[in-house]
Image (cartoon, rainbow, N blue to C red; front, side, top):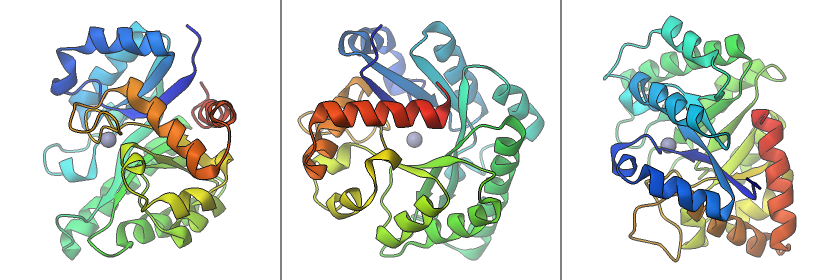
Length: 260
Ligand SMILES: [Zn+2]
C-alpha cells in the first residue's frame, strides 16, 4: 500500500470502533492512511499490538493514561515486555491531565506515573506519546510536564499529542526537540492558527484521536483515522503551503520520530 498519511494517534481498539474495524481499515487502505493505535491501559495496549500485528501500515503505543491512574496498578515489568514488541513505536499515552481535577495529591500521583513512563521510554529507547491537558485557563499540565522532561534533554524524544498549548509552551517543546500533533478541532476553530504558524512544519504531525473529535466535514460522526486527511489540508491552508508539500514533510517527520 502506498502510504500518503499517517494518523499518529487513534484508538482503533476502543469498543466504539471495534465493531466496524474491518470497514474502517478498508477505507484507510483506499485513502492510503496508516495509523498508530494508542493504548490507554494494559488491556488496550495489548489490543493495540494485536491490531498492529495484522497490518503493515498499523503500529502501536503502550501506556497508562493519566486519568486511568486509579483503574490499574502500573506494573512496569509487564509494560517493559510489551514495549519490546517490534510493533510498538511509542510509549503512551501518558502524561498529566489536570482538566477535571487539579488537586495537589492528584497532580503528585500523575507525576509519579509519568515518571514511570519516562523510565519505560528510556528502557525501550522509544519516543513518548504525551497527553497534557491543563486546568481551565492555564498551561499548568504543560508547564509541569516540560519541567520534568527538561531534566532529560537530549536523552528522550517524544510528541505532545492533541496540542492545545500556547507559543511559549511550543517554544519549550521545540527546545527539547519534541514535536506537536494536531487534530480535528483545528478544522473548526481558529484558536490554534497562531501556534501552528509558529511551529516549523518539521515539528508538526497529524492525528485524529479517533473515535473522538471528528474534523469538518464529518463533525458529529464517529471519528475514524482516514479522516486525518482533513487535518493535513488545514495545516496546509494555515501555513499557506501546497498540501503535497505538507504531506511529504509530515510523512518524513512521522517516520523520523517513530522509526517507521
Ligand atoms: Zn488519545
